[in-house]
Amino acid sequence: MIHGLAILLIFQLIGEVIARTTGMPVPGPVIGMAGLLICMILVPRLTPAVQPTAQGVLSHLSLLFVPAGVGVIGHMGLMVEAGPRLLLTLVLSTVIAIAVAALVFSGMLRLTGAQDG
Amino acid sequence: MADFAEIWSYLEHGPLLWLSATLIAYLIGDAISRASGRRPFANPVLIAMVLLAGMLWATQTPYATYFEGAQFVHFMLGPATIALAVPLYHNLGRLRQSALPLIAALVAGSVVAMVSAVGIGWALGLNSETLVSLVPKSATSPVALGVSETIGGSPTLTAVLVILTGIIGAMAAMPLLNLLRVRDVRARGFAMGVVAGGIGTARAFQVNETAGAFAGIGMGLNAILTAVLAPTVAGWMF
Image (tube, chains in turn blue, cyan):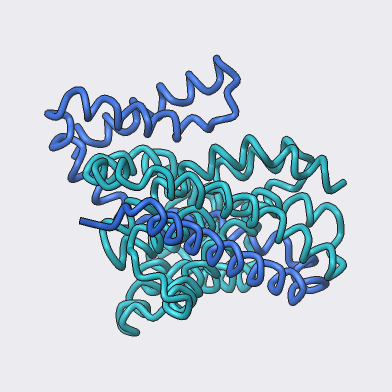
């Protein structure tokens, strides 16, 4: 588990350093994820070393969003004043965007004939 | 024996209390979600948020004090993003097979998520700081905060909007996609990751590992695309 965590942190560190030195608009952790993916392809032995830790972290991904979510208490003024309108905006926008993305994906799958094997 | 006020003043100043409270609130939320058979309305993040916000309000604890404890959980968002490489690695074949649909759905979903939020919010009369903070709401938290700051929004408000978008997406996705008769797990997962970020991805993993992997790549790619497009969208709107 410590091996896995060390690997995850090393790639995050590399990602952050690359993001900051190049000034790329891509966030550090995303660069780190791409880096780990490339390394796993080049060195397949790496996968069993990170797999248990990665699966452990991902199985409780929702937990990690709780602290930022509690920040809602800092915006109670806005929530009281514009809460229903803000919520309606978020619901409509989210539903429309998910529908568009899913329909474009499945439409293109049919078009390109890339059915799941 | 120390009295309650003394114990409280000790707990108030260390990370122990609010770190424990965050984990316990999440476990309660997760237990309720499980007991409901993972019904979308019993979202574990939403339940935990309500419980903790109630506790902070009842104890008159400022958010900054809470975050000193909860930051250890928040920090794990970075390693969790790196960890997404593992399900991606296992689904490389499937990804290559559907590269074109993936790119088309990414661009469509990302642009619609940004433009529809600003358009609808503007029509409903939301103020301009809120509108700017809405632009990066579909990107995953660490990215959205940076983008919000760059384009002149409020990062803390954006953080909340990202979480709410994720919760709404996680709640609405399954019934919505069933209604639209989108059955392909790749399309379902990917749309959830692009639009509802990390919480959408967490929801997709509950349903199916392949859906989760596609949600993970959707989240990662949309983080990049939002960072690139948001300044243009914000500049065009205002």
